Amino acid sequence: KQEVTQIPAALSVPEGENLVLNCSFTDSAIYNLQWFRQDPGKGLTSLLLIQSSQREQTSGRLNASLDKSSGRSTLYIAASQPGDSATYLCAVRDLYGNKLVFGAGTILRVKS
Amino acid sequence: EAQVTQNPRYLITVTGKKLTVTCSQNMNHEYMSWYRQDPGLGLRQIYYSMNVEVTDKGDVPEGYKVSRKEKRNFPLILESPSPNQTSLYFCASSSYGQNTEAFFGQGTRLTVV
Image (cartoon, each protein chain N blue to C red):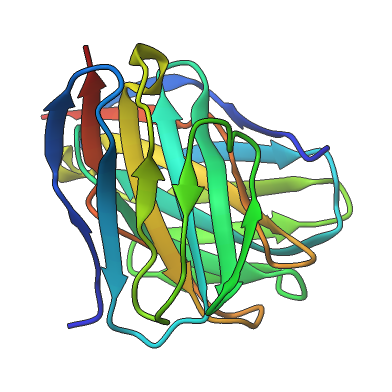
């Protein structure tokens, strides 16, 4: 059974700092991996999707990497801003494409 | 605008009173699913549908029903809600292929008293 773990559970940083969020998964047989952002009481906003055959994806200040063989992904946020404060969720899709398995999330707070 | 729309956004109901949460997507996606989000447990899949008239159980299907009569709609039905179904519910849709993202609705916060 696929399990997804995100470390750290919470992170508080000063504005401007570069930071890394970690995601690990137990079964490397995945279809793709997606990073989401969730604001309190709100829905999930897709940030980046990495196909299983890819190593990384970039969007603006965000860069996500995938090492399928070791079961790890990282989300790098450059020059963090207070508006980046949110919960970040990592999810892997199984090979049949039926289900997204989510990590518990990392709660990020960027202080101004 | 591409979106997944859930209604209602907030609902308070009493134990045993049947309710339906609607979900609609405008992206012609084949795949739709329902998740619930609970503190400490994260997001868990309730039911999913690969296409019209094709549905299957996820990890926590007990107490829920779904139907997929049209491609765009995937309602979640609670025939006899109980307090343990108090949760934040999300509908999601996607197409097929490795490069397709999952899109989520804004969520429905359900309280069963």
